[in-house]
Length: 148
Image 1 (cartoon, rainbow, N blue to C red):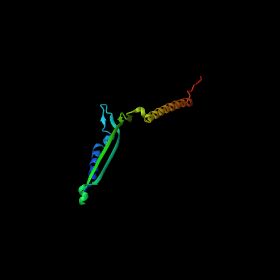
Image 2: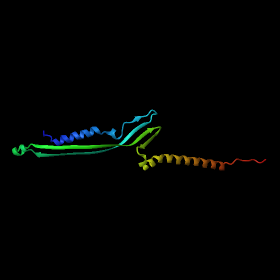
Image 3: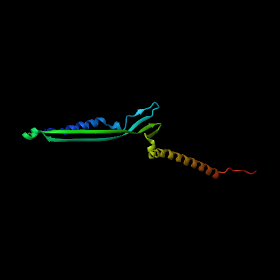
Image 4: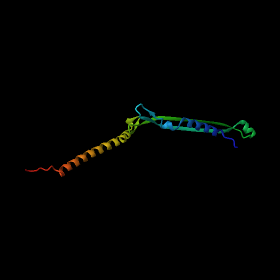
């Protein structure tokens, strides 16, 4: 079996640490149920930066004896940024996405209003059509008067 280079161990340890830090619950959090049955799910944005480097250099003994033993120097570093973005609210037959910073999300607010506007337009159309049918019925079936 070939001997493992020190950079492999360094990278493996760093990647394991990152994997332990970040999982799917970091982005889409665990749901929380409120007393009225509404479920709230936090949603976050995760940014990750990572770097690994290393160098082999010959020791004084390795130069003199040609034993092939080199010294290794290396390091790893990383950073994680977790920013809350929104909360998904599920309850009362609706699902809503509520942004944490609503004033910067004008497009999201407009998209949230579209289903409500469509419902209102459908109600107005149905009301208009019902009035029109009632008017047509009264014109086509006038009350008959008998003259005596």
